[in-house]
Amino acid sequence: MSSRTPEDCVELALDEEAAEADRTDAIHELKLANECDELEALVREASVDDWYRRHALEALTTPQCDSTLRELVDDEPLEGPLHQEAEELLATVEDD
Image (cartoon, rainbow, N blue to C red; front, side, top):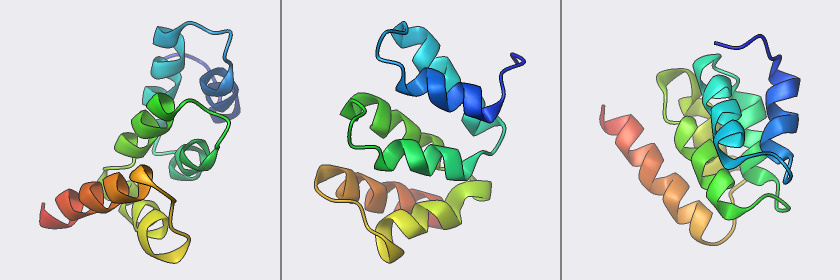
């Protein structure tokens, strides 16, 4: 695990100049640290490439983040294909 803060990870994940592997690692670090709010913010960030938004969405499929995932589906739903993916991911979390 790196010594990056959650804020550093978010900045790196948003940095279009950064290498894909570094951006993906930053999202993974947020998952490992159970930084659900930061992952949700990445999913909702329309300026981020959908690939990274999906990666952040998948990172929310943990018991610690299931309520955040539920918010993305029910309370303040996502639009378009990400909404359907969030519904499918929530169903898998609830089935476990």
